[in-house]
Length: 210
Image 1: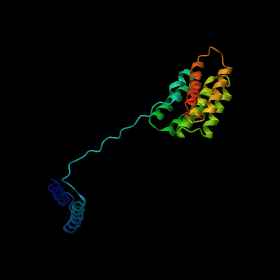
Image 2 (image 1 turned 180 degrees about the vertical axis):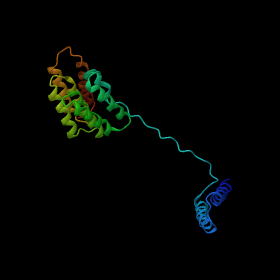
Image 3 (image 1 turned 30 degrees about the vertical axis):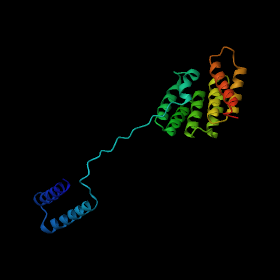
Image 4 (image 1 turned 180 degrees about the horizontal axis):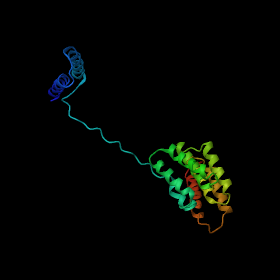
């Protein structure tokens, strides 16, 4: 099936150039030589007997939500300035684009440089972009959030969570125990922090962490 189609196209091109393009004989000979060269390449590398195989569509793999994304509404709120930027950032994180996720929050901070929730979100985004490791830029972001809102549990809790996810369990435990010692007995966030502390204790007793 391949060769008849190729020959038909060659003669159709030559005929069209002769009748419509008004090429003279030397020009047609030159074009014919170029077409013959193309046919030679097709004969050398072409495989017309193979069945067509459409390229499968690219399937985007959605990345699961981070712990921060799952829990931030309970500690940081849903309807403030930060929530808008954090929601957009999480869309990029689900697509696996951690760099854009961090840049979105940085854009939000240019408009709201003293928003502690955005600084917490930036710290989390930088940890994710760094492959789960706490890096100096992320650490500074968490510390900035804590300075802006020293009485808010969100910055401390998520800083501890990022430390624990990076394997720095002792530091995370110290932060969470300090929160429990200073916080009100009936605070809504206490069960969340207490569960994290118990998880570290269980893992240490089982020899899973030191």
